[in-house]
Image (tube, rainbow, N blue to C red; front, side, top):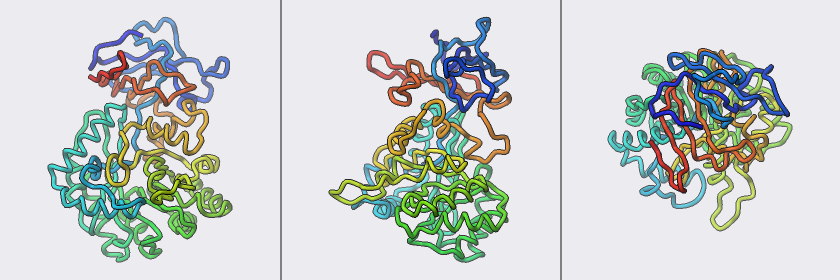
Length: 426
C-alpha cells in the first residue's frame, strides 16, 4: 500500500480488515470473514463506516491490512516505571517488590517522576495507545507528589487518567476516607479512587467506608483487589455481596483478581454472576502477575497467577488486559505495547480467535470507563483513532506485529516499519 506523509490529515481509510467484535452485527461476511471496511474521517472524527467500495479513491487504500481501533492501556504505574536499575527486590513475590518500591520512592522528586512518566506515556503513544490509566501510590492520607505531577503530564493524542492507589488501612476511619475521596474529586478531571485490598490488610469496615466515600463524591473506582492466590482472599467476595445489596452510582473496575483462580469453582461462579449483573469490569494483568504469583526461589511456579478470564467472559463480565508495571521492582520487563500484553495473555489464558474477538481486551474504551454509549469504538462521531498493522495476518497476530501505523484524530502521527531488519520510527 502507498504511504501518506507523516502528520497528514486523512479523509479516511479503505479496504481495512477490522475485527468482528468492532463491526455491526449485520456486517456482510464472506467465507467466514467480514468484508473489508471503508472508514471516512471528518474533523478528526469518524464520519462513516461501510463495506469497501471500489470507487473510494479519496481514501487511503490499505489493501486488506489488519486494523484496530485506538489501543487502550487500562492499568499502568507511571510513578514507578523505569526504576529497575536502582530498585531491585531482595526476593521474589509481591511483598518483596513493595518493600523495594518503598525504598526507591525517596528518589521521587518532581523532576524524576516527570521524566520517567513522560517517557512511558510517549512510548505508549508510539505503540498506538490513545487512552492510558495510571495508578499512583498514596503513602498516607494526603496526595503524594506523583499525584500532583501526573496532572501536569501531556501527551498529544493520549487521554491520561489517574487512580489514587490507597492502602485499605487509610479508609478505616470514615472521616479520613471522606477526605481522601474529596481530595481526588477536587484534583481535576480524569481522577478515580482506588485501593490496595489484600488479605494482609483486610478490613470490611474500611471497605464500606471506601465505597461510601466514593459514592458521596461521585467517583468511579478502580481497585487493586485480591492480587494473591490464597483461598482466603475476601475482596471480590465482599464486593460482589455489597453491590448486590447497595446501589453504587459510578463505574467499578477490579484489577488483578488472581485469587478467583484459587477458590472453589462454585464460589467463583457466584462472584462472577454478581459482578456481571453490576457491570463491574475485570482487568487482568498477566505479565506482572505471572512473575509475582506463586514465586519461590529455585522453583518453577505451579499456578499461572492470572484471574479467571474465560469464566468471566462467559458470565458476561466486561474484561480487559493491562500491562501493569513496566521495568520496576514489580516487573523488570514490559514495553507499554498492549500487543505484548495480549500476547502474554494469549498463552497464559489460552485465548482463541485473538484478532477477531480477543483484541477487544486492549481496545474497548467503553468497558474501561463504563460509558453509557457502549459498543464499537468505530461508530460515527467517535474520534478517528486507528492502528494499522501492515504485513500481519489474523492467524499469527499479535506475534510479528511490531510494524504499525498510528492514526490519531484522523492524522497519521507515527510510522514504524520493518526495513532490512531495522526499525525506523518517525
